[in-house]
Length: 504
Image (cartoon, rainbow, N blue to C red; front, side):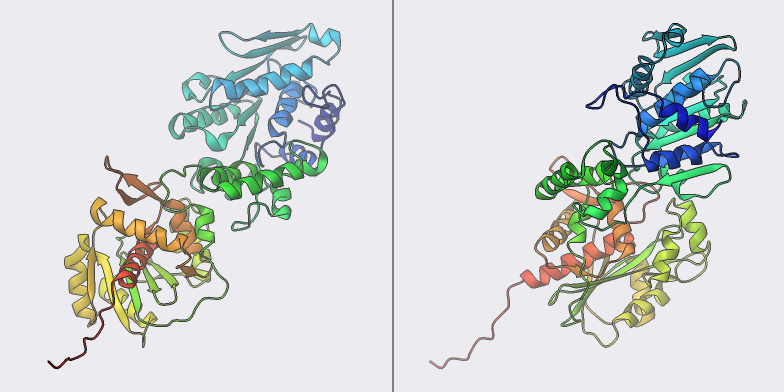
C-alpha cells in the first residue's frame, strides 16, 4: 500500500453526507499524519484514538473503498476487507460511508459494485483481477475464522464487549498475516489502561503505528487547549465546532455525574470509566479535593490502613480532621519489580511513576512484612498525636500481633468492609469530600485507586467498596475511606463540657 496514492485517492472522493455533501473531500493534517503512518513500510497495525465526531470512521471507510477498488497500491487478486464492530448497526456506519463515497464514482466503476444488505452487509467489486469483498462483522470471533484479509478495520475497538470482542480481534489479526495485510484499529479512548485498545496505544511494538489525541488528565472539562487536542478536526471544519464543544462541556459540568463523565470519555477522549452509577467518586468529584497548598498538620491524626497480600497493594492514609489534610502512601513487595508488576496489572509505567513521585515504595520480598510496615507508617507521622488507628477486622489477628510487635500504643478502631460498616464509612467519606472537608495534594496513587473503586449495593441499597476490575488496586481508596470516615465520626461527636461544682 502506498500512502501518497491513498491520500490522492481520498482527496478525489466527494463528501457523502452532512452540510458539505457533494464537495471534494479535504484531509486535515491529523488525517494525513495517520494515513502516512498507517501505510508506511513495515507497518502491520495502526491504532488511532481521537474524540468522537472527528471523522475517524469516515477516514477508515475511504481507505476501505480504496483497497476494495485497488486504488491505494494493493493489486492482490480477490482482496478481502473485513470490518469488525461491536454490533451490526455499528458496522453499518462504515458500510454506509463506503456506499456514500461510491455514489460519486464514475459510472463504469459503479456498475462493477454490488451492494448487499442481507443476510450480511457486504460490498463486492469485480474486475479483471478477481472479485473483491468488503464485509461487516459483529463482535463474534467465529464469524471471522478462515479469512485472509488484505485490510482489516476494527471500528470503536475501545468499546467492544470483553469476551467476544477479544475473539474477533484475534481472529481478524491472525488472518491478516496470511497475505501481509494491515489492520486499522480506531476508537475513542477505552475506559481504562487494562483494555486491549489501551495496550495497543501504550505498548511500543514493532510494526505498530500509534496515534493518540488524548489531553493530560485532571484538566477542567471546558479547557480550550485540551479540547483541541482531543478534537483536532474542530479547527479544520470537521465534526463539532469548538463553540459547541465548549457549550456542551459547560452543560456537562453543570449537570455533573454521568453527563460529565461521558463527556470526558467520548468528547475529551480521556480514559475514565463510563460507569457512574456505582463509582465511589467520579473523576471530577475527586479533583475538587486536590489542592496545591495543603493545610497544616494540625491536631490529632487518624490513620487508616489496608493490609494487602503478595499481589495486592498495602496502603496507609493519614487524615487530620481539624484541617482536612489527607496524605496517602502505598507499598508493594519488591518481587516482582514495579515495572513488571505494572505490566502484569495492565497499568504500564504507572507504578514506577508513583514511586518517582514518592507515593509508592517497596518493602519486603514476596510479601510486605506487617510489623516493619506499621513501624514505617508510624514514622511518617512521628511527633504527631495519633487519635486512632483504624483497620479492617478481617485481618484482626495478623494486624493485632504486628501492632504488639511494633510497640504501637494508640486507640484502635476495627471496621468491616461489608455492607454494615462499609455503607456508613463510604457515605461519611463521600459527604466529607462533597462538603470540601478533604484536601489532598495531586496524587497519582489516589487518582488511580478511585478510578478502580466502585460500590456494590444490596437489596436495601446499602453499599460497600469493591474493585471495578480484577487487577484494580483500590487499597489507597480503602485506607482513605477508613481514615476520613473515622475523622468525620470524631468531628460529629458532641463535646462534653466540664460540669461546674455547685453548692446547695
